[in-house]
Image (cartoon, rainbow, N blue to C red; front, side, top):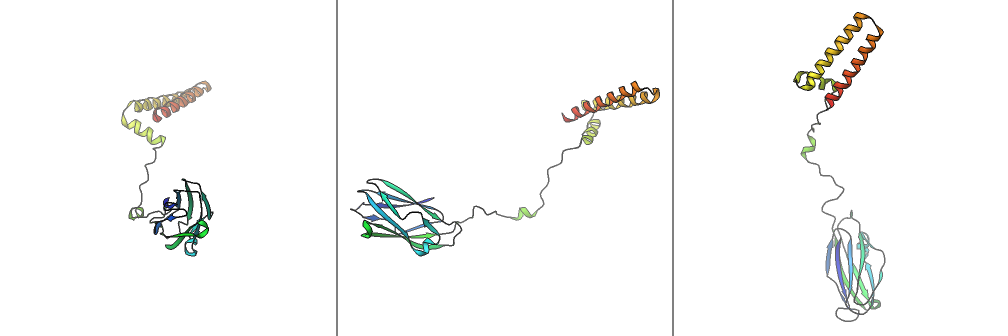
Length: 192
């Protein structure tokens, strides 16, 4: 937020010292800086400026030797506009004008900049390998996980062969338990 300072009572009762011109691209804080006795200040935006800016209250009381900030809202999507701010004290006996130029912001904060890099396909991150791929890598790798997988497969093959040969319900149940144990062990080993 930019700030525009207006000095009051600096050169005598009801005197106003304000810049001739002021430029902004957003809201303005108008600082009424009183250097003397209490004063009533009337603020008015001309028709051109009031199309893009707004002061909530026009009349302001500023205590002796004190400051009073006044917010001036500015439409950020407005086109470039130049108008005048009228500052009056002493019920209009003293008047000063400041020409205010409202420029559109150099960049819209909601705007997205698009460049050539967005037209090129982006690489997707590699997908996590499936459990079967991890199992195949572990067997081929020859590490401790591969050995665990190899012994697990050997145990499952032996359990199935014995269950088929003996045709016993207890042996089949045991083979299923061995199979489940190997699956759990391999799953834990591969995840680690």
